[in-house]
Length: 293
Figure 1 (cartoon, rainbow, N blue to C red):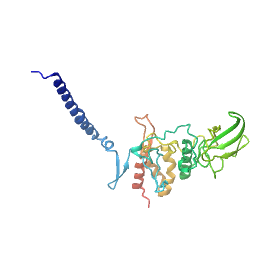
Figure 2 (tube, rainbow, N blue to C red):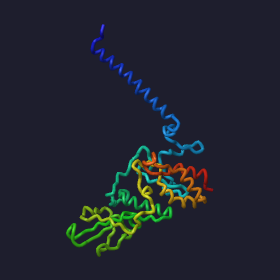
Figure 3 (tube, rainbow, N blue to C red):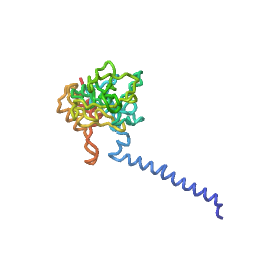
Figure 4 (cartoon, rainbow, N blue to C red):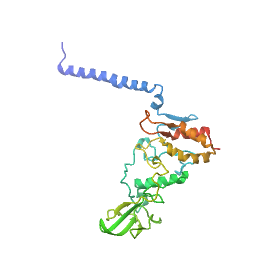
């Protein structure tokens, strides 16, 4: 005796549920777990955690900062790439700043806590700080000596044309000194918090300045990666840090450079991406080989 159509449909649905539960709820997850246990993949599946004396100090896949309690770089360590993920390298807030090339004007609020820096000013400040830390030229095009974007708001008598009537260095406030004293014969003013000079009719004018075409501070030292979690820096950024690390650890430069080379990975498949230096692994190697006395 055949069951009613409605019962047959329910039995078929139940059989399908059981089959797919076994396949997708049991077999498939167990297969992925087994693959993750294969030699060469087991470390990545477990998060590539790094330990020292039985204590987990981080992951080889996620960057971290090497700073003191006040956020200042610890000189004996190689420094990582900047991060825009939360407060820095936060896996739960992986993201970029979403700022682009047109982000050149700072928002200078009356309350300093509400002020925000443009991408240009962030890059300028980071380049200046890295230059000071590592003893290299931190100048970059379109940056002021005090580390903000070199941008003017130029006001003209007829809007877009005519003689210049007023010029404001929009990213600098008192007590700074304008990065140029005059523009087209008009004295340059400092910006006042709360003023929107573009809305007032000023023409946004970035000024390149006399910085070298190829800055000594590499791009990855002043910009965050798309994820904000990148554990690598470029060999060029590692190179400008060698002298500082050597000085702080009283080490042989050849030994430090050898450790850098040992922790440098090449391009994926020989042609994709760029070489990178894993900062956490390198710093752990430094502590093992060249401990600070």
